[in-house]
Length: 246
Image (cartoon, rainbow, N blue to C red; front, side, top):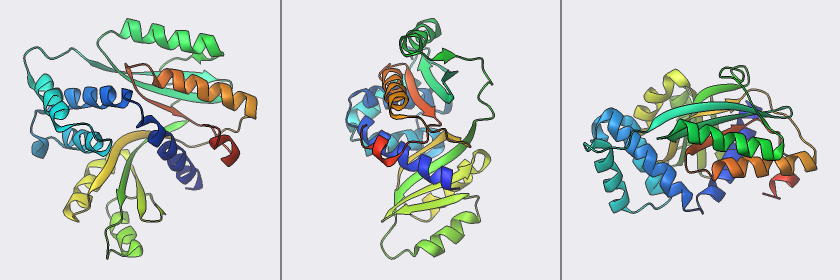
């Protein structure tokens, strides 16, 4: 569980930096379009869309942009987006890439260019199946008056593997199959989820020296800057000093 906590903290800090960039608007708009296309434009009946809208609101995407993305997803002229994944390596580090694209040929070419520039290699699908586990990750603010220990016991009953608190900010990690049940439970408890997603959590973290860490984070930044790429996961065991350099 310690690895989960450290990974979640690293992802939170990296995500906060990403939210300062306008590219997050594009990425979350794509997620809303795909969610609406697959499950309809009513958030009440479409859990994936409901979470996508919550995540968009968390980084202050305007309401008009959200509504426009929903209309694109439910309209006749919706973009033909595909959800694809790629697995790569940078030395001992595994890098799992999730993309939403209307042109997979372009996307994989861009990924190869990034990897070639910094010394990474593209692997075959399934090559990192032993490194990452797909988990549900929920972030929210602990409501006033709600005891954290009582909350943890209630959430364990619906599948929480870990409940990690930093002040009043709470991260809950669940198995893939309990994602929907946890989302429903939090909503029933009146807890406003600030961010939620199915994410890929590494089971084993890999340390890097400072030079390799700098190259690896540069590679990750390059990948994340591609509009087709939604999320990039890694299993780097970063030190606090290295995290301060990001």
